[in-house]
Amino acid sequence: MSTFKNLQDDTLDLCQELQGRTDFTLTRIKRLINQGYYDFVRKTRILKDYDDITTVANQTSYDLSDQDIEVLSVKYVSDSGSLLLKPYPGGWSNIPTATTYGTPEFYWYKNINTRSGGKIGTEPTINTSDNTLRIWVSKMFDSELSANDDVPELKLEYHDALVYYATWRLYAIYGHLNEAWSSKTLTFKNLYDGIIKDYLGLEKPMYDIRDFDSRRKFEVG
Image 1 (cartoon, rainbow, N blue to C red):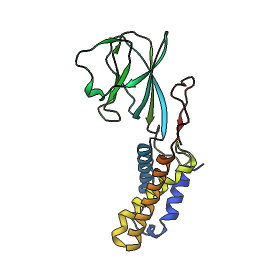
Image 2 (tube, rainbow, N blue to C red):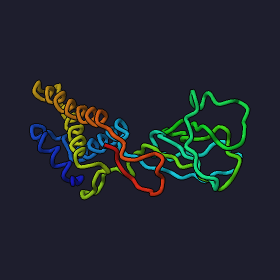
Image 3 (tube, rainbow, N blue to C red):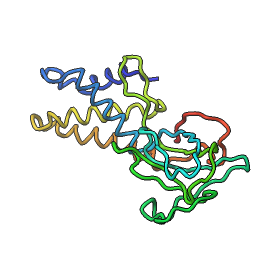
Image 4 (tube, rainbow, N blue to C red):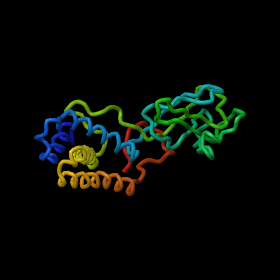
């Protein structure tokens, strides 16, 4: 397990040549580690979870969490059973102008992970209340690393990515002052990018989208 303090120390170890500079601060290192955390989770879609939304009869759309990055699958659960919905062909911009109501067959979403707030809806629009839309999503982490004993919501094997990101960015800041530092910018950026490529290339789902019996936060990989 790597704590936030461990990640800071590892970054300092890789940047010893920069430590004499007055603007090389722990505050900057902390900020860059969190930027790497955000960048890694967003690019890999590594954190996945589900949200339950209670339906309201004839309501055309519902709010998505501002932590959601991408909708992976949607299931409609009612007293009659459950139905795995299909993405609407062409997305939300293609849904019919005239609203129809009934048992849903498709889902659509828009503006996910934006300041304006994401929305999700179905086609047809659900015409009954108190049923459930269960939405599997890739999501952002719950909170940034702050306390020294905070731990990233990632498997240990991916913690180095945050260190490589911060180290790459630090050498990039000062690379114009020293050719060796400029070279290290590329070295650590390649190490960071390599972890992302390895994850995306090896990604294998550890869950079945038909199995919604237990709620848990988890990773894929």
